[in-house]
Amino acid sequence: MLLPAAAAGVHRLKSLCPVRRISSLKVPWRRDAALDAAILRDRRYRLASRLVREVLLSPGRRLLLRYLSKRRQRIRLPVLVPTFLRRYPTLLSVSPPPNPVASPSPHLLSFLEFASRHHALHSPLLASRLAKLLMISSTRALPVPKIAAAKRDFGLPDDFLTSLVPRYPHLFRLVGDPGPDASGNAFLELVSWDDQLAKSVIELRADKEADVVGIRPRPNFTVKLPRGFYLKKEMREWVRDWLELPYVSPYADTSGLHPASPEAEKRLIGVLHEVLSLSVERRMAVPIIGKFCDEFRLSNAFANAFTRHPGIFYVSLKGGIKTAVLREAYDENGELVDKDPMIELKERFVAIMDEGHREYLEELRKKREELEKQRLQEAYRGAKVGTGIEDEMEEEGIDESDEDDDSEEGEALMTWGAVAKLTRSGVGNGIAAFVLEPLNSLSRLEDIL
Figure (cartoon, rainbow, N blue to C red):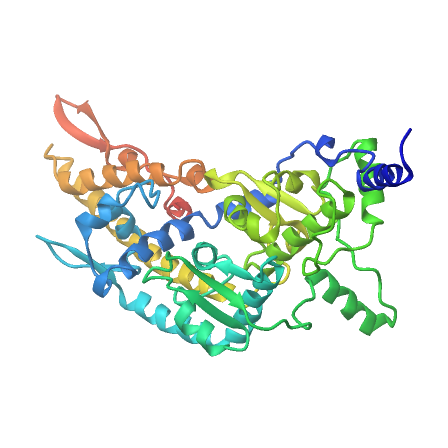
């Protein structure tokens, strides 16, 4: 027979434990072609930005091309570095042999100046974003190396410790020595709590609707299941009951919640939703989010929450890494509904890439016309010319297929080897003639990459 105090303790434990374990709820993963395509469209941008970063972080922003080529595996570049630079000549300038050096091109230098001005213009937005991340943390502080690992996801400049943090001493305090590359044992602390910043996107949306309608709705998540996706009855009932629970702010102190309770699940989804909402493209790599598990009080199995709530999140497997996407931020075509101001930097960088790639395609078109003309002139004499151009085009064709492997752009690839290949046939009295094989339509050049 239990004593009254013991009986009360057992009753309290039972009330904390949910009837149905959250970990036992399984939801099948289903591919979303539109959101996958949105991630694939950024493949060239990611490759180019990693390559350019290697040069910008070098002393004097200059790096020998042979050293840059040795870093190809580290930056996961699927083609040779000289080949990639030929395709995008507006990114980096390469000096002549014998010791070619890669340095920022005039287009890139102009972009860097614009990026500096753009970061300064939107520094209040970036400061509030960084402060929100510190406020989500249970210790109101974050290790500097972890912030540096996610700085591009949140639109922070590379030198945020020197260009952004000192401008807001009432919000931030740097403790320790971060080192020259922000990898030291240092922490960024929150100086003062701001109640205006301690409101999530969901709460702000409810406040905005209250201003329009006059009645403040209950803050809750927007559930948007993809077309043709159905949940089992057990899961539908659980989601319905779970959505009826009060919203738990990611900025609230929830240390007293039972880890396996539906309320703790509500808080977990609230934190993940808020972190993705603070990102520039409303999506982040799952391993990057995982770096903040300790500070944000996330369990080791937090990634399962993304697939457990397919109406709120989507997990893409494209690019060789799991990427968590906020569904409500994208339309049915995979385009951002509300673009972040910092996304303009990416759009300008891509415009520079496209400008250089058009120059590259135009040069290839001229080489093709020159090769065709020479072939026709020499066909009657049986002489073989233009082997240098031929070899170069064959090399470009091989590399193009490597770069566009596992991407939608590879479907439109035209192999230049077929352009330069000749068939030898006898004509009339046995005089040899070279006949050029049929060429693909010139319009297909625009689909390369």
